[in-house]
Structure formats: structure tokens, C-alpha cells
Image 1: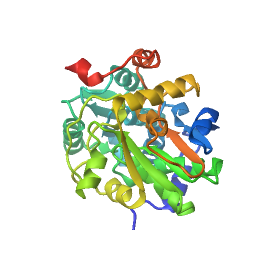
Image 2 (image 1 turned 135 degrees about the horizontal axis):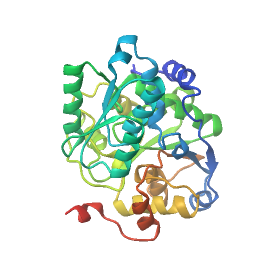
Image 3 (image 1 turned 180 degrees about the vertical axis):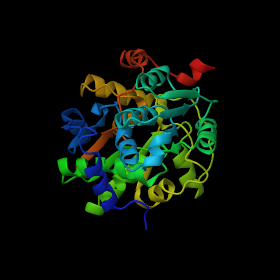
Length: 330
């Protein structure tokens, strides 16, 4: 039995109504013509904080007890979860501390600080940042709200699945970015509960895809975190993962990995053809379609998970530059 069920997602939807934006689902004539089946884009890049993470963070904060609210909340983040938790905490009037590695882009760090959260830069990986989180929980009593491996967070993200299916009732395939699994676990749980034959495809970058490697190994494993245009998909899934690893293993039908040029192609297409500004992590569904790595047989919904890209980097990519962040860091 999965840790998050349809009733949990429906409860989350009611709980966060008014705290998050119900984002549009737009048809893509360009992709429809290219792929040969109807393609729709779930534009979660229009969310208040620029990414889907606000759903899970808002659902988790709404369920905190009085004592937990008094002490405040803490998380590790590659950027978007930290921004979401900072926003949700400010709305609730509580303290928030966000721990991140040095790989997190500066634009995401500044956005979190602007929301009033305390930012701590620790090490070069999510695992390093998580150690600081655990210290703050242990020594200061802060309530940890993980970026993905938490039923409250997964249920919040699952509200996206309800919206996608409501907008496209005959959906045959959902393309969902895959990192720690909080997003795809929630979306898959919602979709499969309502329409079990929907094919849910997780898509990640080829560089350091922790969930993909863990699925291949049959258990959570550590991977090296590497620079990628899809920076929000970086980080491990946690060797003690209790929620998202089993849900992704049981509910996701296929996992596809993309090269950096394929991710860049998704960003370019969404800007030039769809008039959408998205970050690399959000481009993977479109990138997979453009690369011919999928052969859909019915209506497809690609989830554009966020917009929080450094605009200087975005300009370089949409201008046609061959950007390789690993080479630049070397």
C-alpha cells in the first residue's frame, strides 16, 4: 500500500486552496503537429513562487502543530523547495531556515532571502546541506519539511495530477520531471487512482540522476551531483528513503534520461514556440518529445514544473549557444 492515497491528495487540495494558484493547461499546436497526437502543457511555471514546490510546502506547513510553528521550519533545497517553504512560512508567520549547497544558482538563493528566510550555504551537495538540517532539528527543535520524502509534501504535489486530468480527461500519457520523486509520486498516485491506464513517464538528466540509478539498483543509492541545466533535478534521494522510492518504483511506468543539449532544446522550444520561460528541469518532458524518445499513442500532458532559471543563462540558451555548465565549472 502506497504511503499517499487519493484521499490524502484530495484533502491537500482542499487545504491549500487559496494558498496556491491553479495553473493553466495549454494546448501545444507545434508539438501536436510534430508528434502526431494532442500535446498539452501544464504550466506550473506560472505558480506564485515560479515552481510546483509551493503545493507540497503549503500542505506541510498547514498541518504543523502550535509548538512546531513556534520553533519554525527548516529544509534542504536545490532552490525551488526552499523558495516555496520560505513563502509558505512567511504566509503563516513562522521562522524558516533553508540549507543549500554551493551548486544552487545565485538567482534562487536571492529569491529565498527576499522572502525573509535564513539561508545557509553548506558544502557541495544536498547531502551536505541535509547534515546541517539535521543539526538544526536536533539542537534547535526546528520542524524539518523535506523537499520530497514526506507524505504531506507528496500529497500537495499530487494536486497537480488532479488538475491535469480535470483539464485533459482523455490523457493517455503524463510526462513528469523526476528528481527525488515527490512530484512524480504525487502526480502518479492521483492519476493512477482516477485512471489506472494512464502511462506516467519520469524524465531526468543523464548527469547524476539519483532516482534512476536507485531504481536500477533496486534500492536507494548515492550518486555524484554534477552541474546540469536541469539543476533542480540534482541531489540524492536519501539512503533512508521511505516514501518516494517505493511509490516511484510501483507507480511510474518508464524513466527517460536526457543529455544537456536535449534539455537545452526543450528550453528553446518552449520559449520560441510556446512563449513560456522555463528552467531546465521543466524542459525535460518537451525535450524528450523533441528527441524522439517517446512514441505516445494518445493525448500527452507535459508538466512544465518551474520558471526559476537565471535569465542570463536563459538568454544564452535561447540564443542558440551550446551551454555546458560542467565544462564552464572546470
